[in-house]
Length: 94
Image (tube, rainbow, N blue to C red; front, side, top):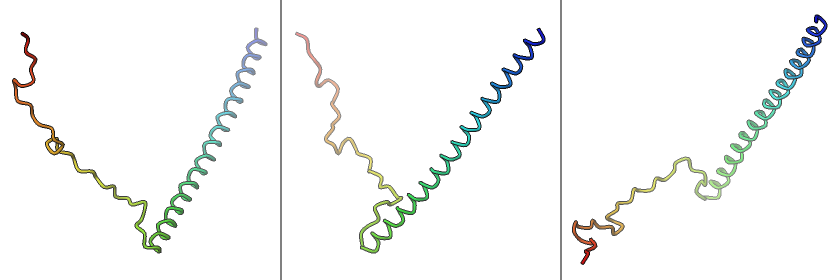
């Protein structure tokens, strides 16, 4: 009985160590991916800045303007929609 408990404990410890190794490997991978993402974001910002500078040098408007133009809200009356007076358009049964 004591040998079985010892074997179970060893098996449990092996599993625990394997899981810890997998967790550490996953964390390392995530950290590497985060570094790659940060580098890509910095590269993107640098490229956008370069594009804007080149366009300004050529007299073209900046393509990546931070301000978005808001579209004006449309007025339903301007679209030709009219209120239908009550009583009109009803189906009359004969």
